[in-house]
Length: 385
Image 1: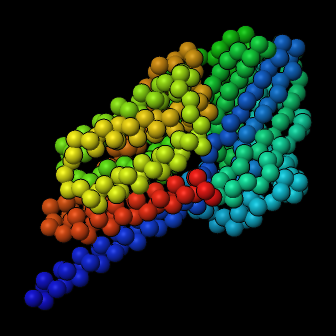
Image 2: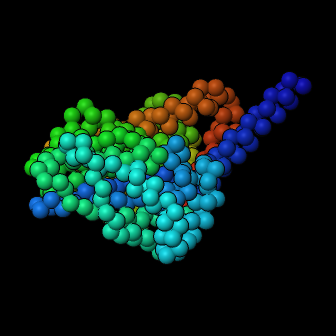
Image 3: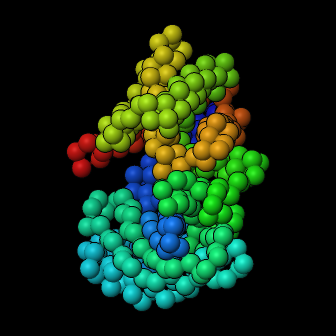
């Protein structure tokens, strides 16, 4: 009897530990300030003038929160960041004055002959304070004149400033180059008279990384949706039906969204993604077996998630010379991210407890309740708050 009581106590303690863990996850995701790559638009005119428009999280730069953090809340400077986030544009520009010289020194724009250019300051646009729980994007604009006979340009900045998405256009706004660059990584030499072709293997790895990182660690709502699918059953057959349905659906709308054939406002898509999380959590509580309609419903929700993925890829941009390869690589990265979430769940609870009589009562039910609750909070936040 003592052994039985001890085991019951351990099961109860583990159940509450799991519940608290998921609660903490949900709270953290709801208040996340994601550290995202900057978007660098470099335009070169026919007369040799160039302009850099760098869209970035200015508060993270001032607070010295670098790419080693996936979320600003993880940094010891998080309080400083939050205080900056609440500043109106004029005061935030004043705070940036103290780090502007260092920021400019960390930017390296070079010619093909390794001559470093010194772009001049043009403007800093800071949006008004909006939702304090969402990062705002400021835009730094620099400009300069290329030296005579400059045929190529190379972009790079210091690793502490994080990753960058570089988009280079020519005099007629034609695409010359697009790439995702890891912190400190230099771009290819971009030829003024034509595209600098990124090797196909590098391009595939870049877009796979972007897709994977959009799930792990940045796609917290997508992670929670996949966790909900896992909780329904750790047996592979019903899980495979659900994941396959979700994958097929989001692959369709990802492609249609990137091609511009389907476009729905994020103000509509994001609340519906939250609603999909609620549905998965609630049905986990109500159903014990896979009904025929669940993969169909998940297919419908997968279409919504695909539109969310398309928005990310549209922002990054696709190299038109390898459009299909980039699209497939991004989608593959998403699938690997989803598999990583499922594998993590399996190693955390499925491997050890899936055959226990109390698995549903102690893990599936409380876990699904928290999934539904977090989805409900996000739905309210995205519609009413």
